[in-house]
Length: 268
Image (cartoon, rainbow, N blue to C red; front, side, top):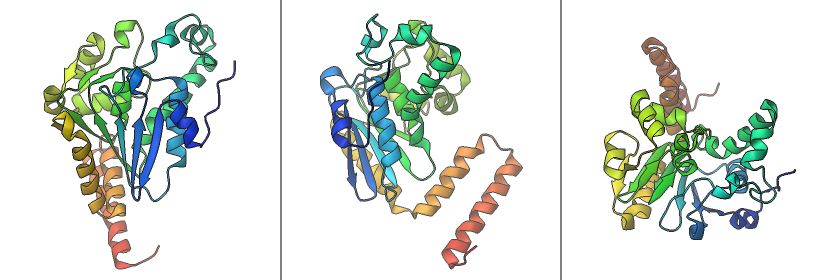
């Protein structure tokens, strides 16, 4: 079975619930299937991956948002039926595949969740209502999260006998620590707005009607700083967890020298 192709045509993306709008240095990626609470499918994931691959190089900040009352209700449950989603690998098909086949399929799915942390952009998820499973992991894929006061995060995979496999376990653990991440995943419980901010999962919580404005305000603040300084700072912070204190200080010195030379107009 060959999965349907999703190319670079925005009309193809829209058919599977994804829209891209570019406003100068700001890109807005919208999940736009509110009738199904933005339930996710492999086709949606291929569209999101395609958005990441074709994003204009002038874009500095990406805001991920969703239409309707929910950010995303997670994976389309039709994937778990015997017939699955037409043209896609069903859960049963994936389970019956070899290690190599299943790993390759999941790796393709993960691409939709991993490009948000690439070094040349800063990404912000604006999250309202339910963000369940794959929806939770998609929000975790972004660098920053602004949430509405009605937000409800839940990692339901473990409760279904599965594991979170779309890149969410690393950022969740980095944000809230191992013990809390294990508790959230193993119980599948709901995490609301107040707790999200308190434990570092979200940067800011606002009333639902202010969510769009708050995300845009944050994007504007990020765009106010020089691009190369933001890129260098993001790289320093992303790598900090894997470095010793002395290694981090060394990385800071090297990054600062690059910035000084750039500001002074001194080439390599």
